[in-house]
Image 1 (cartoon, rainbow, N blue to C red):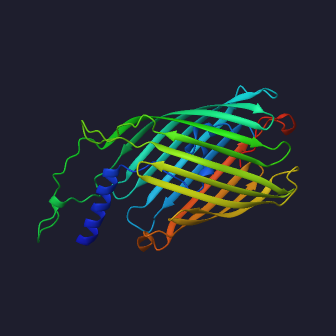
Image 2 (cartoon, helix red, strand yellow):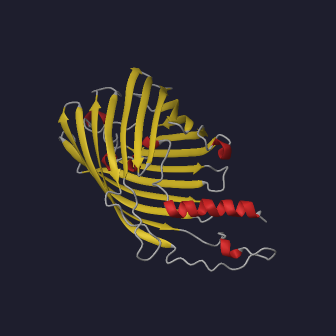
Image 3 (tube, rainbow, N blue to C red):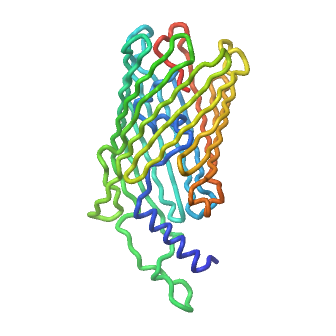
Length: 336
């Protein structure tokens, strides 16, 4: 049986999570979850269909660990080779659960984007997202102060909640500019996204008014083709939500093990750094239409006392289906 001290600490963590209602979920491999970074990234990749799955277990050494999962599908619609633009369509699923209360988020989103070629090497994309979200929690494993009487067993709590779940709509928008070097893997993406534009009410109490803060993201992602079989990939993202800030920078080398004109067989090695929080080694493998990435947060913040340096593992899997012949696909950049 847990000690009283442990119970009180768990209760404090739980009440903190209920009062804050959590932030939007986040990933260390941010560019492997593009629709969580900007709606403008829907359809912006080389190919016709893309499936992505992300899973993350954060802070598994402490009682309030976070389990996150995202899945998405996006595609090009009304694409015609040689035209100056195309539409992108995407569907997204997010799920996040934390702590003894199992405070959870489940969200479904619909993304729509349009990419326009401004000049031979310049593309601009605008995107929007309409989503519906649900937050809910479970009281079965929670303990409250009215359950404790000196020298007596735990009693039944009289704590009451108006609702254990709440539903809300959410609106997002994004923009992306891309510079693509012709007949090369070299490119740069610069853009951003704004989520929860409508600041939806997520209170669990009838008549309550708890607004979900807007989340803004800004990013730069670049790939430079060093040689026929070696690329340098660098990225920087910065996210804001309420009083919270989260800058993250990363660099990787991508090494093609066979001639990339024949097939895709490559490995990526590098690291990300979340400022004042974690060092994140990253390894990825590209095999034909598949990309599998694994990272692990090594915590460096003041929370290290609780985490013992370990933030948590993260896995990203991307499958891209390509039917368009590369020689006629002049407006479908490779998304790296």
